[in-house]
Structures are given as structure tokens and as C-alpha cells.
Image (tube, rainbow, N blue to C red; front, side, top):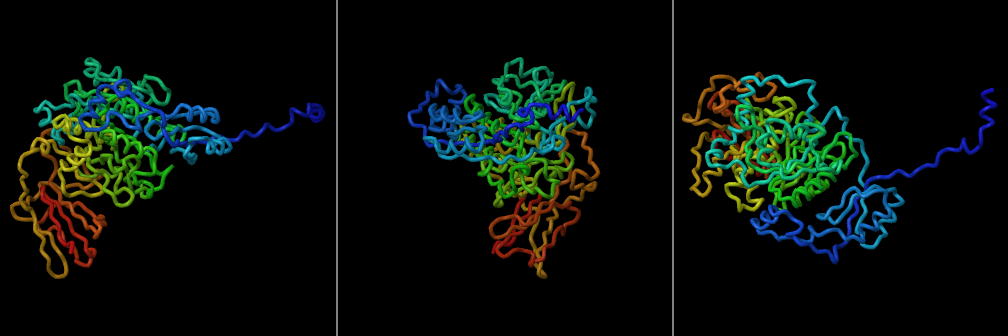
Length: 559
């Protein structure tokens, strides 16, 4: 019976459905902007115009001009959808089939059509940068240790000095790119921002709406490390008096490269709306790139970040949370770009590198991270506050520091500020691929223009018996009262005094080859004066042994 019924069906009903060619993502660049112009006063926010004037940048140049409408119309006519139009790169992102892409290559004015590989995103359960899950209920009240941390996360950067000088980000506009800002519009931590209307603009680049107060809470936590406030009036970040631009650029599970398009769109938007600083606690890594591509030139988002700096904006980016991944021993992108200030994470108890914080260098041996801040911080979450971990929170702590520093010296060009921020690190001139130049210190900016005070030597190099030893000077030798854990996983040293200086001062040392590449580096607890002995055979030809202890840095070798 069933066979008879099947045999009686019309033949057309048994034909297979036609195969539809799959659409992929393409990046189409154009040859010129002939005939296009721009009136800067009509296009840019007054804050953007002022930023360019301060840095002696053109009011507008060809990268600000719009894409030619005729070029854009021809691409739209051929493709399924145009997902991004970029003035900066004179390009569009679109979805098209291979046949459509071939026809686009023949269009007048098209310089190139580049296919972006379609690879799966990371599983949503294993984000590369911390994305906080929505809490099941209100967080527990902050403990005394948490309250102390809330103070210390800014105090160690010199919050008191900035505050006494009246520098809390006034006159600065900071853009925050993130996955969502849920409850930012209602959380008491941000009431002071809403009272003075300090959220200058918002945009969701995924839904194309101004409502960013949806999605995840990661952006809420990040913003709190810039300007959040506890009920006792303690500020969780250094820039509570700044203005903010909130951009939602991320959503877990979206197509590969879609969030990079959104990052670029947000950067152009932030430029137009007068951002001075972009904080990006985001990163893209090994499911779309190889470590050798972390060179600041390969990814779209790294190129976008570099262009943002050319427009006079400081880009501050989290290093990433891949430090414990042996297959990815570098930072993500756009943290790999030379002109991006990349921030690593430090353990608040030891002031040393947290195991999860991504290591440098970037491809080619370039220094990353540039500086570091606490990678464990108190943040605002739905219903209250809690302790959070990730370089996502070190980045806004440094972005707030940069806002205060720039407020003090408003006419500094962006890359001069970048250099000064590195020089403000407590390890400077020493750096390594875990700590960068260390924690920036506000005192370095308050001392600007004053004669440099050279630190007293704290150790000596002694070469003998085919080895070089590092000997701590008697006046610098202090026997610690307790053992120093060198990793966050070690037994915690709870510091409940928010004004305490911190843990015992360790010794940092490294071996560099003749090109300056660090081939080995360590941190040691100073428990004896003869702290380090390095066989001369381990010193590379033309290389150096470099040591930092108690503010003093010196090198041996280099011959």
C-alpha cells in the first residue's frame, strides 16, 4: 500500500532542491575617492575637531572622505548584502558568492576583492577574554579584603596624586568597545555619570541601534574600572570625571570577522564623536590567525587600531588571557599593533604576572605587553559588586590613568603620551614579556619638567670563575619577613591595609641576544645578597645580562 502511494506521487515532488551557492564574506577596496570632499565642522563633533587641532593634525584628509557613491552602488547591485562601509580604508565588507566576487573584481574602480576565511568561532564556553556569565542572584557583599582591593586597584597607580591635583579625567572623552553594557543605565555605580550626562553617545553596531544596555555585562564591569563608584564613594577607576562613548561591538556566536568589522566601524564612529582614548578589552586569536600573524599589520582590527592612533586617539587594549595556553605564546590582536598600548595583568598580592595574562612578544620580537595593572579587580555587576579576573580589567585601569596624565599635559601628541606612559612604569627602563614596563606611576607625571633623579645602585656585577654574579649591596638588602609567592596560584598574601606598600620587592633579570630579543627572564625573591650567578657561556655573543632591583637597572655584557 505504501509503495503504491509513493509511486503515485507527481514526479516534480521527488526532484532534489536546487543547490544554492554559499555566500562568504569579502573585503572590497576601491581605487580612489575622486570628487569626494568633506566639511569637517559639519561632520565631526566639536570634541573631535579640538583633538585634531591640539595635535596639529589636519581638520580632515582623504581617509575621512566618504566612499564614492557610484562605486558603492555597483557593489550593492551585485552582492547579497553590504555589512560595512569604511571611509578610513576606502572599502566595504560584504557577503557574496564566488561568482559574484569574480564579477566585482571586474567593476570599474575596484582595486581588490579579498575573501576572508570562514572558520568556526571559539565555543561560547571558552572565551579568550573573560565574558562574565549573568549571575543567578545578587552577588555577596564585599569582604574586607575586597574593599581593600577596590581601593588598591587605583592607589597603586597613584590615584591620590592625581586626585590631589584635580585630575580625574575632566575634559577627556573615552570610548569603550565591548560585548554589552547591561544595567549600566540603572546601576548605582554609574549614577554620578548619568547625573551629569557623561555618557556622550552610545551605539550598538550589531543591532544598529543606540540602545547598548543589553547583551552581556562585561562592558559594565570594564566601565566600572574606569568610573564606577562604591556606595562608600570609593571610585573603582581613575577617570570618573571623564565623558564616555559606549559601543557594543561583540556578540558570542557571531560570524568570524563580523566583530572585527564592528570594531572598525566603532573606531570611525569614536573618531567622529571626539574620543581621546579607546579602551578595548577584547582580542582575537588562534581560531582565525596564527601567532606569526600577530604583527600589527595582518588583522583588520590591528590596522583599524593603528589608523585610530593616526587620528590622534590613544588605543588601550587588554593583552589577553592566554598565558596558560602553551599553543599561543603571544598577545591577541589588536594588542599586537605597535601603536596600541597593550596592558598585562598583575597579581594584587605579589605585583607579579598572573599566570593567565598573555605573554609577549608580538611577532618579530616586538615588546608586548607595554605596561601592566591589576588583573584582579572589583567591578560593578547586576545587583552589586564582585571580584573579577582578567586583563579586561587591567586595561581600563590604565586607560583611566592615561586620561589623568593627558589631562595634565593636554597638548601632548598621542605617541608622545604613549612613550611617557611606558616611561612611567615602575620597572622602566627594564621591561620583559610578562610585565612590560610594569605599573605606571602618577609620580612620573607630577615630576615632569624637573631634573631627573638617578636611582642609587642597589647591586653590583662581579665576574669571576667563568661566571657573573649579582650581589645585592648591603644598604639595599632587606630580609623579607615572609616568603614571596611568585605566582598567583601560590598561597595568598592577604593585604587588608589599602595604603600598605605591597609585598617584598623582587629582583627581575633577563638575558638578551645581540638584537635585543629577550631569550630568558625570571623574577627572584631576594633572600640573600648573592642572589644570582650566570655562567658566562650562557651569555649570548654580543648579548647582555640585564637586572632590575629597587628602582635601579643595569646591564652586564654587550661586547
